[in-house]
Image (cartoon, rainbow over the protein chains, first blue to last red):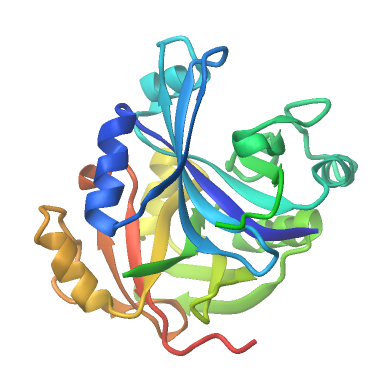
Length: 144
Length: 144
């Protein structure tokens, strides 16, 4: 079962400037920063609200550290903007199997590590009416 | 103050088929249907989770009833996908004034009526790092 909007993934040209924009304009605060050198990605998570399942909904701001990263290629083609949406579940593996059985392609055979120690998979946007869709099982309930 | 992700706005070629996809794939249910003949838009609201401020986070699926509507033109240019994101506040007028004073353009001089009796305004995507951003004051706390 999918129990929350986990996050909205937004790609940006300059992560620091975009974090500053969300902070100065709306008062949103960065609750987590993470880098993935292998994937060439830097990200900032901004918690917007908690959710009744014990977790929270975030904005995930994504920057690229090199032009040939997934985010770098996206930026070159599409510019800044919303990249994907993510739903939270307590069982990303089971949900992925169930959704696959309905003819929707997942991008990974098995869930991989995502932000903040989560386990994630992605569903193919062509099977989801144009929306790159992520499934997330968070590592632990957010107690902040 | 912005207290929740109010919704993610997603445009689609065929609203009924897209509603069916979200229902069959994820189990999400339509909690509200609305048409705006003047704007040439049909929409379905799917509640994903409640939020601690007494409201909820939704997916808003948007279809066009004619090619020259805002949604129709968007679809012709961009195809299906995420169209905008929306944050909830108890004071859309005050938030808009405060955000405008920081140099971010709003699309309307005064808030207009949105889904489910809400009052809304939009912020210009060029001032928001590529993200069309809506501010929403809901009509009444969602008691479903």
